[in-house]
Image (cartoon, rainbow, N blue to C red; front, side, top):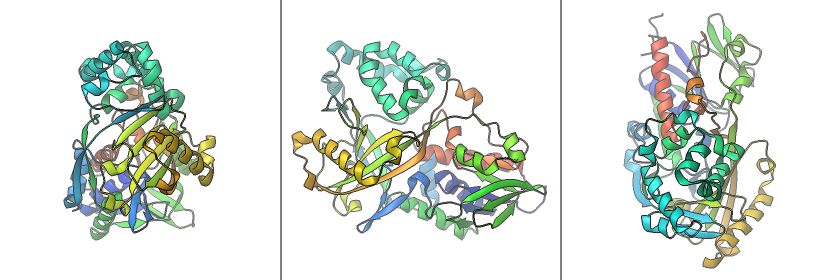
Amino acid sequence: MSNTFSEVVIIGGGITGLAAAFELARTGNDVTLVEADKQLGGVGAFFKSGNQWVDRFYHCQMPSDEYLLKLIRDVGVADKMYWNSTHMGFIVDGNRYPFNTPLDVLRFKPLTFMQRLRFGIMSLLIRRLGKGLDLDNIKIEDWFSRLYSPEVWGKILKPLFCSKFGTHGGNLPALYIWQRLGRESNVAKRGYIDGGLKTIIDAIESNIKSSGGAVKTRSPVRSITEFNSHMRVMFDNNTAIDCDWVLSTIPIPLLKETIKGSRLDDLFQFPDIPYQGVVNALFFLSRPLDNLYWSPVVNSDTEFDGVVEMTELVKTSQYDGRHLVYVMKYCGRDSKLFSEDKETLIQRWSDELIKLYSNIQLKKEDILEVEVFKSPYIEPIYPLGYSNIKPDFRVGDSHLVVATTAQIYPSITSCNASVKLATDAVTYLRRLDSSIQ
């Protein structure tokens, strides 16, 4: 290997690409980060509302997010973090329930008393009960039906999982859900950073540039090819960058388009797994709702399947004194909902939200502004046994390295998991090329 640093081009300016570029740049490596959009962040992108920048999709930090919190410290914005206790609700058959304490579970009317008792006991023991089991090869429907009973699965849990993963909800490996329980709880301390994800993303970008790295937005990649023992990244504007390594962080379907017909395509052995997208509406309200951070919605005559009262965590000053509520529907990017026009969706979901909270007299005039954002590649849908087919970082013997959400499993998709993935990918890349220090 050469004694000079190798040049690395990172494709995708989401949190994985940003974290990888930061790590390489701060150790003096020649790195260029390219992003197709005009804005960095991926699903962490933001928009201007009034005088404030607002996250397009809801995000928070958890005390267990060690990789993300380290990155926040490293880029110098840890002093902007604050923490609050948050609570959960559950909306079933149009009725809203708090769902935080053992007493809340015992009062949860959608289940019989014995079902509530079993639900509470199993939920307390589930982390212990999963240890030693081959959960990667057990369907979540099979495991939860045994733990909670087929009746509880059918009435509460199946609609809950299918709301996020569609018809795949019951077929997911139980390992994925079990892993998720290690990060979240009904009553949880959650964190947020003043200014939202824009604060973190701007700080990372600034650090990359001050360390000599380059950041290019509005730069869609047309193709990635091998060229004279190097890699060539060709852009839509017919410009190109030749480099030693490419680290791709974009979703697998997009990456496959850029390598189609090349030797890289022949080497590419990643499993072809589907993705769920999301349609997300932000309601800026003049008043709060139930003062519950997160409430899944089941069988309640709403198209959206979750309500996040963001201002239970975030200061209202972040939203010019307004209360912000996210409601969302997970769906495929080829679904009718995903292609529906914004105004039609806003009208329908506004009516549904008002009806859902009619007993607290939520009115149309309480809705001050509504914005809609969509993302096509939110969540990979993993098959049973995915641990055995989860792809490695390197594509064959090429100089293309891949780090995407399809490699996060069994961790849940989150900013923290994305930062860890970036850290692991950079470590892997350094082992491959000793000139990358």
